Structure formats: C-alpha cells, structure tokens
Image (cartoon, rainbow, N blue to C red):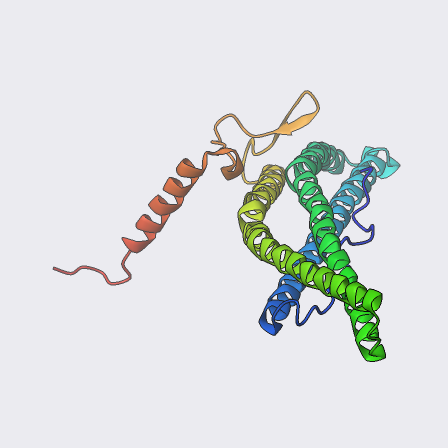
Length: 282
C-alpha cells in the first residue's frame, strides 16, 4: 500500500463565530455540522488504519504457519514415523491453500474496502476548502467591523472621514450578506454529503464481510477435510489436499447473488419455524 491513512486530517479548525452577520442558531448548526463531519473523517481514517493492521496480521499469520509446516515437513522426526509424515504433509497442503485464500482476501479487501474509503477520505479536502472560503469571509467581515468601530469611536466629523466611514459601513453590510449566502449554501450542500455516508459505506462493509466469510469458510473446509472422519476422508491431488469425491462441496455464500443468498436464509428460517418440540400424538 503506497498511501498513508495516517496523514493529517483536512477538517482541523472549527468555524469562527460570525454573530451578528448570522444568527446564533445558524452558528450552532454550522458548528454541529462541522463536528459531525470531523467525526466521520476521523472514523474513516481509523477504519483504514485498522483494516491495514488486520490485513498485515492475516498475512503475517499465514506466512508463520506456512513456515512452521514447511519446517515440520523437513524435520528428521517426520521421516521416522510414516503416520506423522502423512499428517504433516497434509497439514502443509492445507496451509498452502490457506495462504492462497489469504492473498485473495487481502486483494479483495484492498479493492473493495481500502480504496473506496481512501477515495471517500479525499472528498474531505473539498469540504475543508468550502469551510476555509467561508472562514475567509468571516475574517474579512471582522476586519471591516473593527475598522468601522474604530472610526466611530474617534467621532471625527470631517467630510472625507464621514465618506470613508459610510464606505466601510457599506462594505460591512456586503460582507455580512456574503457570509449569510455562504452559510446558506453550506447548510444546503454539506448535510447531503453527511447523510449519504451510510449509503456509501454499506456496500463497502458488506464486501468486507463477504470476503472474510469466504476466507474463513474455505479455511474451515480445508481443516475439516484434514480431520479424519472415516476411510478416504482426505486425499491429495497434485500436492494439494482435496475433498473426497463422494463429498458435496457447497458454494461459498460470498459468491452467491444477494437475492439467492437471502432466499437460502429465508428457507433455512422457514425450516426452523416448522420444527416442533411437542410430539403429535393424535
């Protein structure tokens, strides 16, 4: 991964107070919106960080187990006991298949989870630019307001001073209108971005869950094959442990269409509901 989810956040500075250019309620709404957006950005960064750590842990665990079974296979102890050697070889075959599954999990998670979250995190640069432009309007308004207040306190009645004061008052009113318009635009657009966060993240989380379901499901299947359950419980083909031909392998739920997956779940629930713990004696 070449990107860095730990880089500094875009939303770092809370909007300045702009009363009376905007009302107190408007100030509170903008501040609440900023804090909500800041929380979403922070959550997005932490999700990327934790997923990166999780995938690194999966990779390291697979490498460690693969090395362990490889070392066991080359151990002199295995050559002294045929039964142990067979078990170790089958175990090594399982870890090799698991390692391939882990690589697929990492690849899928990067494309369906990390990359979308990285793209989503980049949108906060635009949000920060919008808030920065609004903040600049507020600072300009405060500077003009300070000049007007200073001129009014002087009480200078000279003609050129009065003209200058009127001009500054006009600029102050224009600056207040600009702040009001900016505030209105922000409160129309950014809440839409905030409210769409769930619609964006839900398929990403669903893809992650399905990828893990597929990975852990196949891992369980591999070890189930490894555990003896009768004659011919485990076989090897081309150096890989495979299921007996008589066994029926189920397709992983993560590979099924959503409608088919939901249909299977509903059928299973229907079968459970039809069960009865009371024997019918009639």
